[in-house]
Image (cartoon, rainbow, N blue to C red):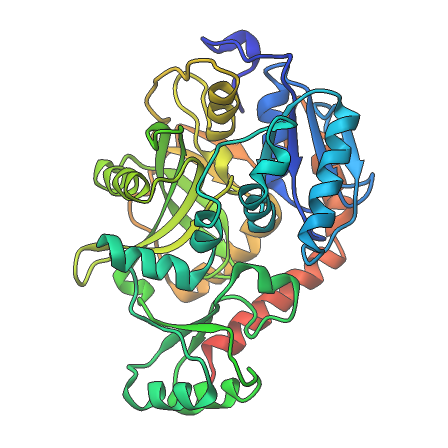
Length: 419
């Protein structure tokens, strides 16, 4: 559990509230609940945008108020900015913005002039956030700055895909090129493994004249390790909090959201992340996914999420700092205390880890570096001092959630067996 205000060696500014910003219809978001608890336990007033009044986030005892605002993430940016400003007026004082998805992070970055003075947020080069959230933009930045990433192709037509298929080494991975298409009509249902040329061409016939996909080198899980980095960087792109860990399980298996992870010290990876962020001049919270390829000994950057990650509560320093607390402290002019990360700490997302565990056991896959006995466990949903979000999650998850998990699993299996 996160350290409360009485047990941390710092004081947050309780006069400056926070607003959890999310766009789109995904009420079972444990990351937002984690942010509400993390700041709320310090006595910071926390507000959140929610789909309705019966989401787990809205049920938290640490939430000052939920602003019910159903969105899809595809609205006109001007409308979303106006909505944020209206909420800011209702809060009545500048609040720290905590985006939980790419749509919110990009909107804030690209409309800083409209939001500045009304809210507190890290200032960043306006186009950088969108570029980092894009698979193609990220790949180009990696090439530009010498950061290893999987080999990738960005076809502009079906003919490009045919040409790629002639020389490609299968299996390959298909992903949506832009983060935002998941709210619209995605070409593929998340990360899709394609095993043959014929399977690729069959799928590609449904991608339209301008396929919005990236075709990427497949890194076999038998020869790889999944690593994550969470950090907060100040306006000089200096890390004030930086953490590394290993993803043990995800859902859908090997290709989706973190279901189980451990904190593992990795100075080499921490240095790589810090150097890259310094080179591109990014400020704010980051959530990185990397895969260590044992075949060539390189950490290959798969995803750069320019926002708080859903599993950020895995990481907390011995001083009680996580990335959300670090951002609030920094933006309110307070020092962020140093402290080592809690090595060996474990994070479990209760509603998706059980199906993930069963799937991983069937595959025979094991993750290195996981400690035999974790130093502690952070649950995504359940907390003794704030039980209602867990109960609300159960109420909303049991039937539709189980159906959704099954659909994700089926999509993943179809992608893995395409012929």
